[in-house]
Image (cartoon, rainbow, N blue to C red; front, side):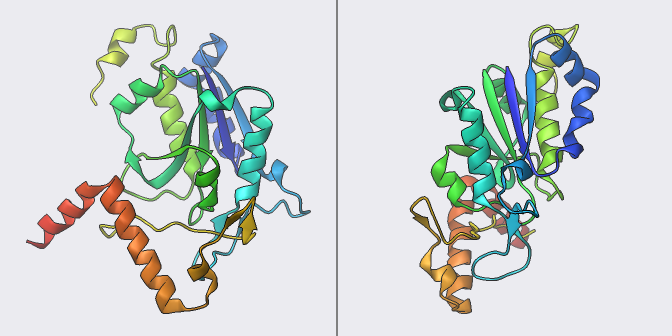
Length: 233
């Protein structure tokens, strides 16, 4: 298996990836892991990977260009059309042992580490990215989630654990998900930021975001809606 990790904070992951079961898997050749620093794919002297969100609001948004350029660089070395691209995000379906088993038979995984308010939504229009969450809480960095997922998968690979049967028998703030976010540039490879976010009309922006939050939650996590209803009874 090949695993690529795209991160703006590579030091968070490098040391843990050289320890314990993950190190054993790498030493045995069961997995190769490549850590890519998104700041290497910027074009300004400050190596900027984030910017303010269109439409206003708190927080910062990761820019689309560093991710796109990094993925294109990887594509120049191997066929990423066969890879599974996973974004570490609280908007995703909750990671589970069954998901770890499913991913452990893949040849190539690309883990994208979210940070701040999230990533420019246009990245999802350029690549078939799956959001994945390790639980209903928010971390300060997607790198931690990437390490959790990497560990859970690598331990299932052949010849990594002495007793693979043990691994295969293992046990297993409001109700809405967040809306899509966009940042500069306004037009990237023909993909434009939704007009409402550049309108300066704060009520329309708030209504658009609430609509998108409901749509995403109903589509991806209807259990959150049912849970919220039950809590109000």
